[in-house]
Length: 233
Image 1 (cartoon, rainbow, N blue to C red):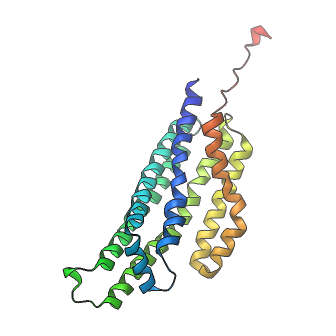
Image 2: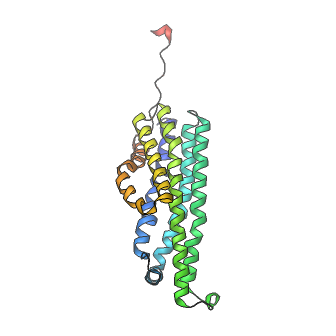
Image 3: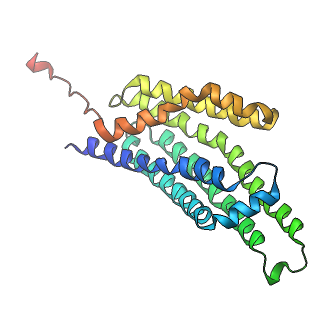
């Protein structure tokens, strides 16, 4: 196996770690959070505390995997355009830092729901309301992070297009994917009630990352075809 193909497959392996995303972004919230009902949310979080903690751990690992992926992609693309590869890493670092910081909200919500001597001055409805507010703050931070989920794909897609060892159509798809995420993020700021509908409408575009992951993992990268010396023509 060539060095380039090995590097691409290592990046694909890190990309595979993104499969944790549906667990902590969709599965855990669906089993622990009841929209607009603080009392029911508190009860479900406490009833599924282990699952809630696993969700926080998975989200932490997701941020670390995201950083590792960006470094693997930097190594893959540094000879294509080092400045653009650095932009990719920088945007991933911002997104990952935001994810890790906002985990404090979920951890604090669990602490508030559990109560104890530190919260003896608050009655149960107040604790439930505060805990729900913290969980919503975590959700709001993820909505803001959607912009960075898109921005990092712009240098990624550009690098794929210019690389010549990955298909150009995949690079263009990643560029459209990045623009779509940015649009969803901006829509959350301006018209939050429309965000879910827009996400469903644009969902086919978001499969670009799954295709990129599978391509890197299974196919890897094509070695550039060496030029034929003029004396041999």
